[in-house]
Length: 335
Ligand code: UFG
Image 1 (cartoon, helix red, strand yellow):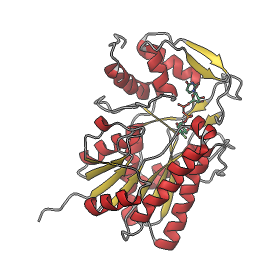
Image 2 (tube, helix red, strand yellow):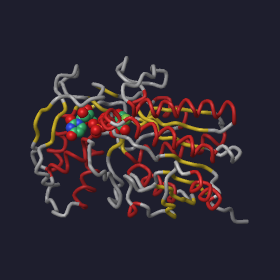
Image 3 (cartoon, helix red, strand yellow):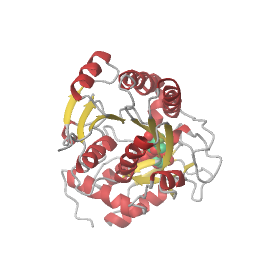
Image 4 (spheres, helix red, strand yellow):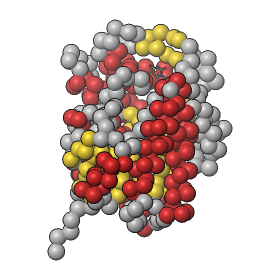
């Protein structure tokens, strides 16, 4: 008797982390379907499953997708995720991240026992009260992005208690890097994230990179972040799906490498990798930025058996560099 592959729906599967997830899932024998409104994702990144183009906030569209795919699990990456934008335009965040997510959950909860994996964020914790942030850390977000994700996490707890909808929320620290194949990677338009901006600068962006503040209480005054490879994040989701089969509930785990790197260290690492100086200038702090965010991921390691493979910043950034260099119209000779 042959068994059919498990059918999974990946919302936001045309985006950066979602597309890496689809690749990993298909490599592990899952049948993948993607929902994406292509507002920030890319059609060409959907290579491992059928694309249903539409918005998770659209109930009629979602009902059709669910009837067609009949998913046995849902992974939810579709969201707005830029901290500074959430400060200036919170409505986008409450509508896209909270309201549309609840709309998606209306479909999921109708399928008995259907597990949902949710992309949450380190931004739910706000200003760190300890060097590393574990799951017990107070959740006190300082921007609308963090608040929107925390609201959904809380809904997931309630949906488990009332409807028995099993879920797992993963709080990503700073997702970075690209699949070694370099056919998918980080490509936001406009780009706001540090590592892609640094490589864009090296590849000839005429605007110097801005360092947003060097008066933070960190060793060199610039913000410190925990960069974690996108494929390591995706592997946690795979382990999460397996875990949920045996341990129903509403779970949440922090995902990071446990090591913090400053903005200046990121610049230096890029210069080492490429042999090219990063043109930069110092400007004011960016609204909504906490000084440092570093994960304590021991729970994910111990409970899920998660073991990140890319643990050094240089290793992670090299994979990002390969991706950016390959997609640049001007090829760069750097290492
Ligand atoms: N930075 C600069 N110059 C830039 C871009 C960023 O100095 O041009 C600094 C930021 O101020 C910050 C650090 O680099 O201190 C990292 O910034 P990113 O924009 O790359 O990432 P964020 O830390 O703001 O946010 C990311 C995700 C969020 C997630 C958060 C969790 O975008 O979704 O990581 O740590 F919540």
